[in-house]
Length: 193
Image 1 (cartoon, rainbow, N blue to C red):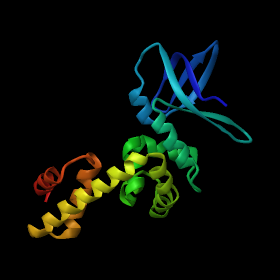
Image 2 (image 1 turned 60 degrees about the vertical axis):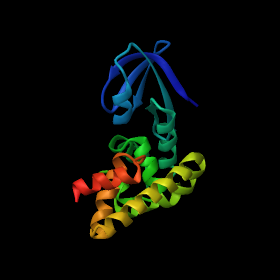
Image 3 (image 1 turned 45 degrees about the vertical axis):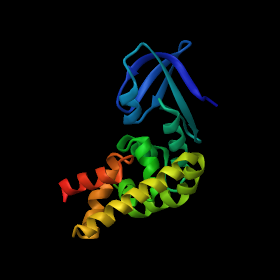
Image 4 (image 1 turned 120 degrees about the vertical axis):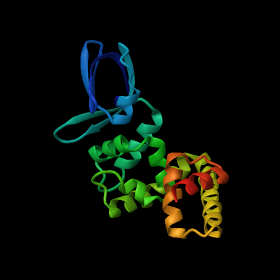
């Protein structure tokens, strides 16, 4: 119903903003990611998601289209409500979350406060195919990232490191920058092993 708001920024807080549009003030819930992207400019434009329940109409705002898409995918998962989805997008960047789902990385999703192993697995199970379909490009990059990761792990094993320990370090490196080459992954892993 309401797809975006374009108006005067009246109030800005880490969890919400108030935007005045044509004399009407809208209370819009936001994630920390969106909060960090909002400048203190007088006028603001936010993409929105309107959630309608029996007792309330709640607006959620997003600076980026990709964040709104991931929010909508998250709330489609059984057991994930809008507040949990907002917490996930406050704890992780949309790109990190998208990559974690595409790569089946339960640990990253579980690192969000209040998300247990079963919920993280359900998110991956329900959304992985949708994420890969929506972001066609990512299926290719996911494959290449996994190849780089596998090659780096093989090289570290040859160098005498235990695979399980090396995998933890490489996973941590890959979450920080998933575009690294095999050589750079190995160099960074050697510094941390």
